[in-house]
Length: 299
Length: 285
Image (tube, rainbow over all chains, first blue to last red; front, side, top):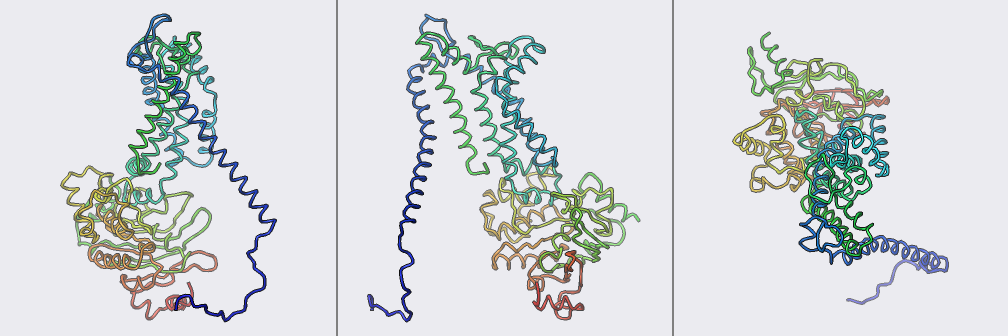
C-alpha cells in the first residue's frame, strides 16, 4: 500500500522550530561574506605564483636556446653566449654545500629528537631558529670576514658553499626534526624489543621510515640555497668562465642573473629573464623528482 | 658453577650467543623469577613488592583492572620500561634462568635479545616488506647469509601461523596486511631472534574476535617451545591460553600489587583472596 498516509499516534507540536528568522539570515550573510573573502585570499595567494611563473616564462623563454645552456657569457656587443659557467658553478656550489650541510642538519635533528633532553633541546632549537632568521647577507658578510679575508684569502667557491651550507642547515634541522617526530614511538620500541641497540634502531628503522620527509627537507633547503644571491656576491664573487676549482671565484645562476639584470643592455635583460627561468626550472624539477621518487611514505 | 658462569657470560658478553648449551643439568626450558620488584615512574610508585615465578614452557597470564600496573610490570621483565621519557626506577630482582637482568654489568640491549616482546598495537616496520620485517632483528644485529634469511623467514612465519597467508606476498609492505596478520607478523619478527621468553602486552586488544582467536591458538602452540608471559584485560582469554594466572590490583594509593597467583583453573574456580573472587566474578573492573 504505497502512498498510504499513516496517522501519527502523537500530537503535533505547536509552531515550527526550524523557521528562518532575520537574525539567522544576517548571520548567514556575514558568514558567506567572510567565506568569500578568505576564498579570495586563497585565490590571490595562488595567483601570485602563477603570475610570477607566467611572467618569467614569457620574458625568459625567448632567451633559451642551446647556446644559452652550453656557452659562457660574452662581452656586450658579441651576439650569443649563455650562462653555462653559472649553471655548472651553481650545481657545484650546491653539491658541496649539501655535502657540508646535510650531515650536520640531519645529525642535529636526530640529536634533538632521539637524544636531547629538556633545556638542551630548547637551546639547540632556539639557536637553529636564530640562524634560520639571519638575513642571508649577514651570513655572506660573516663568511667573507671569516674565510675570504682570513683563511682562504680570496673569493672562492668553497667560501660560497660554506655560506650556502649555513643557510641550509637550519632548514634541514627544522624539517627533519618534524618528520622524525612523526615516526611513531611504537616503531622504536619494536626495534629495541628485538634486542637492537638504539643507534641501530635509528639507522635501520627510524630513518628509513622518515626517508621521504628527510629527502623533502633536504631538497627544500637546496632549493632555498640555490636562489641565494647576497651571500654569494660576497664569497664566490661570480665568474664568466668555467671553473671547477673550489679555491677560485665561481659563477652561479643568481649572480649571473644579477649581473645581466643591472646592465643597461636589452639583450642582457632578456638573458637575465632566461637565467631566472632556468633557476625556477632547476628548483621545480628537483622538487618534482623528489615528490615522484618518495611517493607513498611519511613526508 | 660452570653453568652459572657461562650463563652470566651469555647475558653480558658482546657477541650474541644463541643455542648456548650450558654444562650441568639441562634446563627444563627458560624460566623467570621476580623477587620483591617495585617500580617508580619518576617520583610516583607504580608497582610494589611483586614476587613471582614464571614457569618454563608455559603461558603465564597477568590480569587485573586498568591502572593496576600489569603493563608496567611486564615491561620490567625485559627492561623495556627504561625506554621513553622520564627516569623510571626499579628495585628488586628479575631473574632469567637464575641470573639477574638488572645486575650492574648487564646490557639491557642483550637482555631484550633473550626476552622478546609483542605490543598492544601491531607495529610492523612500514619501510620494510613482510620478509624484511621478519628478519629485521637478525639483520640489525648481525649479517645473516641469504640462506639464513630465507630459512628464518619461512620458519618464523610458519611458527606464527602466517606462512600460508603471506607466502605469495613476502615482498609486499608489512603495513599492507590486516591487523591480525600484522600482529602475527610481529610475533614472527620476535621469534626470529630466537628469544628465550616471549612477553605479550595485551596482544589482542586492537584485534577483532576472529584475529584474536588465531593469536590465542598461536599462543597455545608456541608455549610448547617458549616461555610466555601475557598481559590481558580479558579474563576469558587468560582462561583459554594460560597455565598460570596472576591477579594484579591497585589499592587506593594507586600502587599496583600482586594479589594472587595460581594455576589458571584454580584461580578462577577457587580464588583464595576475596578481591580476586570479586574481580573474576565481574563485580568490579
